[in-house]
Image 1 (cartoon, rainbow, N blue to C red):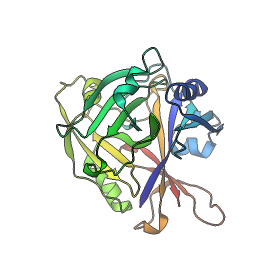
Image 2: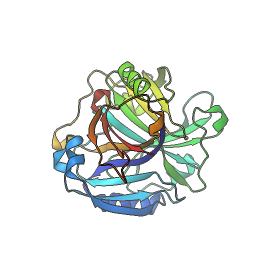
Image 3: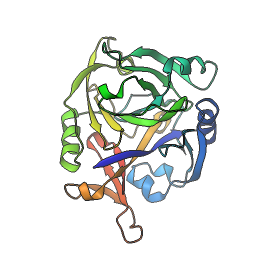
Image 4: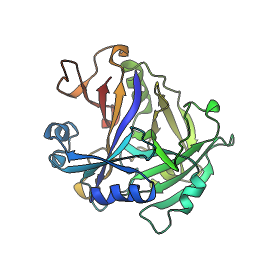
Length: 290
């Protein structure tokens, strides 16, 4: 069973500058640095990332879910123009207060803050970050009325708690998780997603089907049905960017069977460590066994 989101890997032309922007304006703190292993780059079908440096930041409340900036990407990246990981959803104390602190910084407000439904339990804004990554900054007012029993952070900006991806076939994506994991998967729900409609020149009131995979801990993966014109990865080098990989933890004993690995990590202390999967639509997911 999927337990938690551990790491979000994002391309940036200047990883250190992107990390510094999160530290300066979102009060994140510095974490580990390193270089992308060749076998990981090959598993992602991005050999150009082999050996590239990365730097990592974590939320200021000490939460263990990090954002890892990898040297790469091109100048013409546009969010949601291709299938795969599309947005990072951060849990925040007050999206209204947050957006007022960000003008004239590396963060650009796109939409909101606004309530996402008439129930008025989830309030969020959409931002572009320093590397053109798409961010949802979200507060859940009453977790008892939410699919995810989150605890709102005791700092202004908390950890990534939902990762969003675009799917070419939502039914196939839902079937994949039901086959390989024991996590609940919701039925498709039609939803207004302003940034997605805007990316494809659709009317603002267009409804897009989405489904949520909920974790054992208060994390989730959201999959949005993308228009037929969405492009597959990888895009030409000048248009690459955004999130390239998400790392999650899994309780290995609860898996219903063998996973369809693209890459198996070397065992640690004699125990399987996990590896890389490729979801329907080509989206890579790193699994780390508990």
